[in-house]
Structures are given as C-alpha cells and as structure tokens.
Image 1 (cartoon, chains in turn brown, cyan):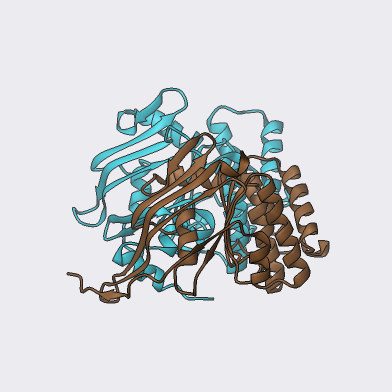
Image 2: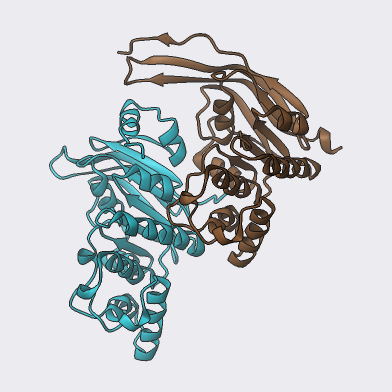
Length: 240
Length: 258
C-alpha cells in the first residue's frame, strides 16, 4: 500500500540556461526527463558529472525554473503542478511537503547551530522549546558534540557543517526529501547514521530523491535509480 | 497558503519628473512574508517604498491594503487622518539612518512609548513597563530606558528604532536599507533579530536593499529593479541561483565570492 502511493510525477522536464551576458549562449542541461517516485521510495539520480543531477534536484525544489515539462507533487490529498506555480504555492510546498539538503550550509552568520537546525520546525509553527529539543536530539544522533550547539556553524569543520545541514533537512519530516550528496564529507560512522535516517524515513512512508557518490551509501538506500544522460551540446545563439 | 494578500499593488507609477522614480509596478504581499526590493542606486527602490506606503502619493495605479476594520481598501480612498492612523499603528517604518527614524532628544523609553501614546495609552507605569520589555526583546539593557539615543551605538539605535515601530504590533513594516549603515558584525545580529521577529510575530515586511546577501538571508521573495521598472520577480533563492533577466544575471554575477 505504502510503496504504491505516488508522490512525484515528472514528465518531459527540460532545463536550459540562457547566459545573456555571454553572447546569449544556451546550455541545455536536462531534456525530456520522465520519472515517478512513491512513498517509501529512495530514488537515486545517477550519471557522470555534468548530466544535471543537482540541476534536477533544484528544479524539484523550485530553486531553478524548469524550462519545459511538468513536475507534479502530492501535497496531502492534492496534486500540485510546480512548473509555473505562483511563488506562494512553492513557499507553502517547502514549508509542509518538500525538504532539501543542499551540498553546502547557507545561513545567517552568528546564529547558533541548534537554532539553525530548529528553524524549519519554527517556520512550520512548532514552538521554540519543542523545536530546540528535537534539534538537540537529532544533532546528538549525528554525533555533533553538545559543546558546539550554541555556536554558529561558520567555524565548524566541513563534516560538522554537513551534519548540521542534514539535521536541518530531516528535522521537519517533510513527505518529500531531496538530498544533494549528503554524505560527501562524512566519516564511516556518520555515513552509517545517515543511512539509518534515510531508511527510517522510507519506513515512515516518506519519498526521498538523492545524489550519492558513495557506492556503499547508494546500495544501502536505493529503491530505484534514474540514469541521466548528457543533454545535447551547448549552442551559442546570438541574441538581438 | 494564505488566500488573501495583505497588500496589493497594481500598475503603480510615481515619478519625480516624469522619468525618475518607479513605473508600472505590480505585486502582492501576503501576511508573514518578507519581500526584498533590490537594484542599484537610482533604480527607483526607495521611491517604490515611499509610494507603496503612501508617504508620497502614486501618480497612477493603485495600492490596496487589508485594513483591520474595513477589509481590503484602496488607499487612495482613505481620508488623510485614517491613513496617518494606519501608518502609525498597523505599519512600521525603519529608516537607513536611525537618526531619521528616532527622536534623538528624548529618552529611549519615550521613543518607544510615543506610538502607544498616539493611540491613546496614557498610563505612565504601563508605558514604562512595555517600553522596558521591548528594550529587552531588542537585547538592550532595560537600565538604558531613560538614556537618550545619542548615547547609543549605531546597532543599538537601529534596534531601538525597530522597537519603536513594533510596539503597536504592526502587521507590515517598510524598511529602507536597515543594515547598510552598520558594521558587518552588527548587521548579522540585526538580520537574525529581524528574522526571528518575522517568524514570531507573523510580520510582513518590504525591505529595500542593494545587498543581495541581505536579500538571500532575509527575504522569501525578491523584486529586481532597474531604471524604475521591476525587471524580474520570484523566490529569492531562485532569483539569485537561476536569474532569468540579463540585468539580474549581471547583478548576481557581480557578487564578490567570500
């Protein structure tokens, strides 16, 4: 039952970048991408670098604008078309449906790690105390030492920052979670924790899509793989 | 999703000489949303802010606001007295230089209490208590209540200016370069404070800034202005990571990488 509840339907998705200040060069990155993902799935995006794996994730988050095609996401009992949706709609989806763990943590300087992690919960209306308690539990699980929780992550090591970022992405338990190389700078122990988190999320009927360069992690979490192919070569098109 | 916008701007034009200013601006702002207006000096950002807030009347187009008592209202139809009441209770104004937004010759407490007194609050003890609370909320020692803002640092003055505005629980705050005159370290703290206030109080805000990093950290949505017109609008991270308009692409590619 769970594994068959569809969560995302992507059809004919294309993304082309037009570089207006470089002679109007057009860079096609995604072409005619189709896939479905369901609750309980972990869809792994595969393919050599430059085939648009991160670009695809960003389109699914509304961070990049798709050039053509359709991205439909289930939010509660409704299907929402993201391509061309009003900004309000995308913001609402990000609050209650789609979470995203980016490759790099980008936050207000001088905000404590605990509050950085708690923020998505705060935005969803959870009170400050509960949000912090849940943030603390997650940081603990990801082996971020308690003495760092009150400090701003800017001074943390790459691995520590990434774990703060993972905690921030997982904490609000979004039904759809996008992961851009979440384990890239983690040691073996912490990779295991992330694998557990992903498996738990799957068991809870959440739908995950991710990029994992680490084969061990990929094999441990994937339920299906989407192989991306390079789009046609860039074309230089002089604009008027 | 909020079905009803708090503020709705349609085809608004306000120019100083027929050319300079802002032209044909349309956007909606929803409760709890922060909207940044970015663009270089002279692009019409500040004119947009003052026309949207009816500090100067638009030449053409309309601005609608969801007033507490009459619902969605065309501001052009509001009598001057009602507009003034709106702007000192339901709206706040944070200026780039705190000196322009504060009364420098009266105490910090009096600066905060002024808007309350303007709407009829007279109880001295209560006014002091409320003012003291707001100082603490702004991370200013409550013992500074009787000090004049001239003795405050720039960052403290800016926080005092915010307290002075928020004391009447406005739903919409207009800010013109609120962090531009501050040291970088103080800027970060003020940004964090603003973001907390927006989350905790459900404030909506329109923030004019030339600093794209401020927009990224503070704003849900961004309007990009050039030559008096809005050339692009969208989610802030989309505007910065996948800009569509040639001017926005130029602006974004000019950011210094740290």
